[in-house]
Image 1: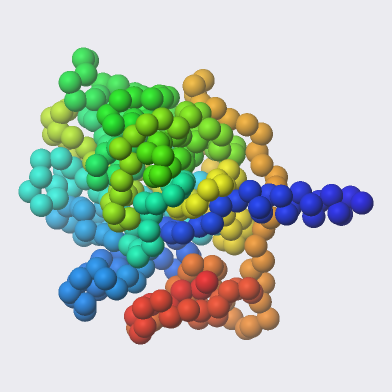
Image 2 (image 1 turned 30 degrees about the vertical axis):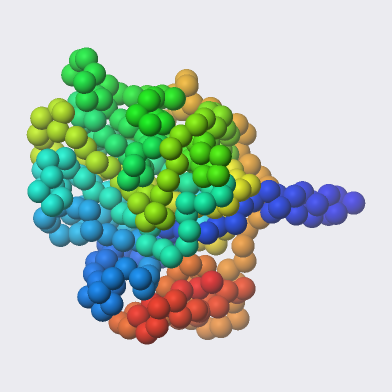
Length: 349
């Protein structure tokens, strides 16, 4: 009877999860150099973005090497995220000026042919900062935004605001703040933009650490629109605080887009498919008073990654083949290596 109850609970949990239509998950073989391969190859080989190769486009950055602005490591992810093998570091500094603009920015964008702008979708990501290379609260930062800025996060002194600094992280619809909390270093902030493109509304789901997402702002009217490749994961910093060459680091994990219903577990849609990063439990700060949290979820079931094949295996969504690729070519149990853009890129699906 107990086993039947557990199975029933598992099936309900799986039924409540949405369908992932795009993911930016980082497998164990992804490095900063992978971004270079994924950025220029389409333009060089095909002359357009019509042939998509990998989950990210990378071209909004400064004049330095890619590794100056991006880093990939298991220590950069939310340890509660067991779908990602690694997390992403984005850095802005005194060189991060793109195409002669006056604002500093480092951003990656989905590289996909999927339609990310129709129906009822949830845009997921987790965000953190550190006391080392901490963001400067004297500048306005625009974070995880769309090209039209119909919804986004902001941090720091908003342009036109009185004072010299502002420690708040805020969520906006059309430039109007809907929710705020104090940005605390070493705290993981988990978000999902709840976007109903048919109804033209946006809401917000949120938690900290490993707590499951809960809706903290009900959907409100917004001018929702996207061309499926204009969601900027990264930071644009305005020069309202002057200029400062000191680097600022932002850390990301659990980036994916799914159709409703929402996956609330921070473990991700494929919990257990990747080993967690080094534990950060000793450094994660207590959630700020305005943060909404609930008990950690225990309903997500691990995805098997066992295999009878010899040698290392690749996890779901990980690269398993392509010109110049030297990593695992055998996929974990339940997945197969699919030529996404032959002969340049194959992926476990």
